[in-house]
Amino acid sequence: MTAGFANRPENLRFCFYMVLVALAIRLVVVAFVYPYWLNPKRDHYEFGYEPGRVARSLALGQGISNPLHETTGPTALVMPVYPAILAVCFKLFGIYSKGAAIAILSLNSLFSALTCVPVFLIGLRSFDRPTAKIASWIWALFPNAIYFSANWMWATCLTTLFLTLLVLAVLYLQESNSKRAWLGFGLGCGIASLTEPNLMSVLPFLGAWACYRLQRRKQGWFASASLAALAFILVVSPWFLRNYEVFHRFIPFRDGLGLELYVGNNGYTAHWANSSIRPSNSPTELAEYAQSGELAYMAHKQQQAVTFIKAHKAWFLEMSLRRLLYLWAGFWSFRHTYLEQEPLDPPNIVLNLVLLGLVVAGLYRAFRENREEVAPYLLLFLFFPLVYCITHPEVYYMRPLDPFLILLAAFALAAHGRVRDTGLRAGKRSPLRAAV
Image (cartoon, rainbow, N blue to C red; front, side):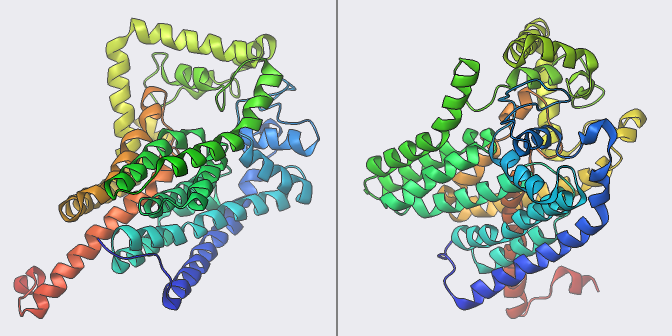
């Protein structure tokens, strides 16, 4: 596995045109789907859901507050970065307006299209140029990448872009103890965690891997890594201090874990999440949330979930494994009542299984060539899904891992192409030609 960062004009041109192609495809989809988000049902709650509600509060000068259907006050349920972006769109184009819908979906499409660049560069860094080009093309045309950018108002695309950029940085940092580079990594981790805290389930391990690689090269790493940690703390501290000032309690990132545990662990198995007991969908739960306050409500939901889990340990283990299967393969149930709610599951399962087959082949080849270079991928695949296995999955939770699955799949395809070309040049007939 060789290749440095792209610094040749042809690589820059390739990335530029790839981003344009990916963005054009996504904007075409935006033109067809944006009216869906203008539905005034439930006071436009579907327009961004909780982040959209907080964005409305920000645009109205009410601060980070009111994530649900009522004026419930300050919140730590939603991280601040993405709602701030939505709030800017609301300020410029109007709250819940057509212009805001197009702007938000177009921004998400841009984030997704720009992800082509780190995908290409990671492919060059970890593998080779053919793998990088194939992976970029797959990402530009990948159905999940298109759908969740052009038709989804959540931080998924921004999170994916952040994660690919930070993994790319780690691949560089494993060979550099530059304090400036490590400072940038720490700042990036801070901003990314204020967008999606679950990124912190993998970023410290990736940073530790880079330190290990520097140690193996007998390069100093402690001072640079400490600077990165300090930069991270400086970025997230204002949010932590704000939460302590508002709620008089230390809240690491956000306070919704209790609710997510309760949604996934209450005895319900017909679907991967019992959304009917969310305060956004249940008048009873919303009334409890509004009356008791956010922190007390979350603590009560966590107590209910933990009590249920302790009383049903075998159920919890089985459900955790089912959730793991769903996250990777997309399968939950083939029951008619379930498929009525999730009609796209069968084609998604086929897509996931084909991709996973290629990923396994890519991992096998990569492990044989240079097992240490495979470590970042294994860390991502092992740690990122863990919290969703014990709480509950959603269809968009695993999307930040898609670029890395695609990179390994592209490596398998590129390697197969190289073997086939080598065989043909040696005068051997391919199996297809032999059969003909």
